[in-house]
Length: 214
Image 1 (cartoon, one colour):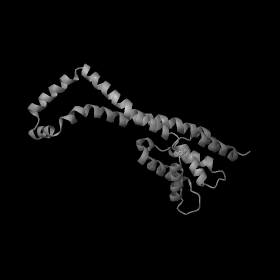
Image 2 (tube, rainbow, N blue to C red):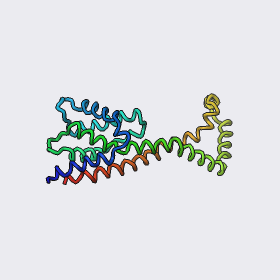
Image 3 (cartoon, helix red, strand yellow):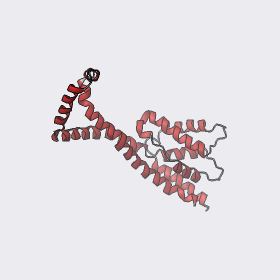
Image 4 (cartoon, rainbow, N blue to C red):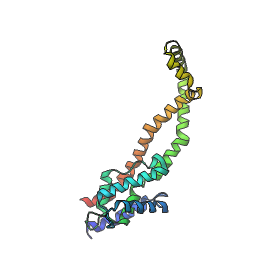
């Protein structure tokens, strides 16, 4: 059995092992067909590697409209290249719709994990940690320093700036520390978690398909 023949079953098996409730849905299958048709501009029934990567980005951008940030992390160009090579059995430098759908399932394998992680953080962990951090700051008597800054502000800040602060509702200033802490989580912690999830999934994909390149 040739290398090409032995690699294809591994990609198909990888599709089955990485499928999730998102990629198994009828809506996802219809999305793949729609995107494939958009990428197949010459209507040949096949697309090349550049068009495949465009398709990967289009699928993730579409999913992001419904799943939010959890779907905004597509596979890397190298991962897509390896998947393309593994799927191109006849070395025609093109893949058909079925192969395209298989690759989409593999590249979107970690979306369900990211969705679960994201909303767990948003609903449970972020508010809890923000409250605990604020409690810690209160124990450290940070409020005393803030009151001193506030008194200095009242004495020295330009009148127009004081007017601006007075216009903003007190509820905004009271919730500002929690909002800042939440933003830190969203911009620094959550992306790192997503990257960890993606790295695990992409490395698994690469281990199963990169052997065809040797």
